[in-house]
Length: 157
Image (cartoon, rainbow, N blue to C red):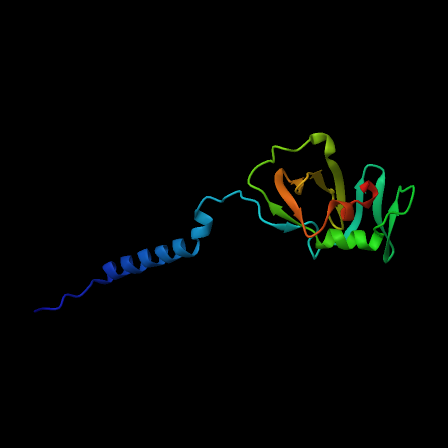
């Protein structure tokens, strides 16, 4: 039986198609349509530098190396340092769809100012009987790792 040799032109075509296949394989995630499913995320990323938190006439702002709460008629049960820690420990878990039990009049609108960002991050907190829902970047989440009364002690009953 005679051996057949593959021509160099045919071998070049095999190499070209193999390389194209490898490029497509390594870039498969870029070629597939992206899902817009939200991911769990911290309220404030660990590498972010918090400057100020505002809600209505209340503020929590950096004063040198410490923090101060502004707009309070009396001292809340949560100190400014504990409030900052609650914001750093809290995270958002995504929910599939908007909760139907929410009353829009109960929303607490909070603006968080971070260093190096020209605009504040806007959070809408919706306390409910079972969980606190959060609307952030047009996506719905539940608040985990902290409570609304720790984040916003001036609203605590």
